[in-house]
Image (cartoon, rainbow, N blue to C red):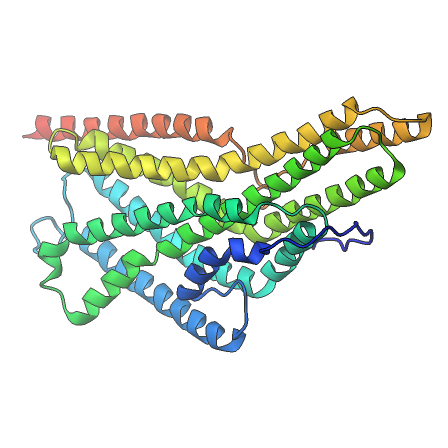
Length: 387
């Protein structure tokens, strides 16, 4: 739990718009999906969100069970989904569906729980920092946050394309199966939306540290009032990062694991089917891989930016001039304390979320793709020898 802030900072003049206005697009979007982050009619939205959660979970169980049943059928069965005699390829398909199933079934309830229990405390810390210490340019902030809308539109477009691909077989299904399939396909939008929500909050916390650094750089002569204000603001910014870990730790753990498995699976798809896939579908597949890589880059890069800006605050403190040995020692101790307890975002403490995950993911993907391709080649060689 976040610690209560006992020290007060000097309020500044109120801005024309508040921080809630900057987050309004993501608030409205998540409310459509049944997640209320700015509750007013809390009871109604909770019932709607709970129903969305139940229907989404049911459709995922139903759709995944049918797909695994079809994959288990002999290849000559009309209902079978086996697209290859290779066990490696079929196993890869099963892992792909299981990976998407775990992302939706585990992340969606977590998002619902966080919105109901932990989010309000984190949001209060954000509003407190913005209103009492640094007021950002809210007009510019909202424009920059609008980038997340592009990610959501791309995810929706990818889902629509996936539905169009299965459309020839889709027409023969019953009305119930059509509903289950469509809802199961679009259910992934909520976990992706939660990652956009996380990126918004994490990036905002990096701006808080940047604002503290600018305040320090503008100060020509340090006094006790300035030092006290910096201490209080740093404590508050640290509480925001702690709140992010409490709210998004499990979501990040599941999502990062999903991204790694997803890259391995789809990289094997591309390599294994490059000779039989049309250029158009290959281009779509590569575009989807690039979209996911960009999303993963934002998820890992923003915590690295928080770490970098917190370190910059400590470096700025070391450069300022102080009158008196006592005040100079306090500034030095504050800079040392920042460096010893740099803010970090982690996946429930199992690993830190930072830019180092990107090369690790690429290396892991290449390793497993090579192993899978060796198994696949060995199977094809055995089949050729037997025939």
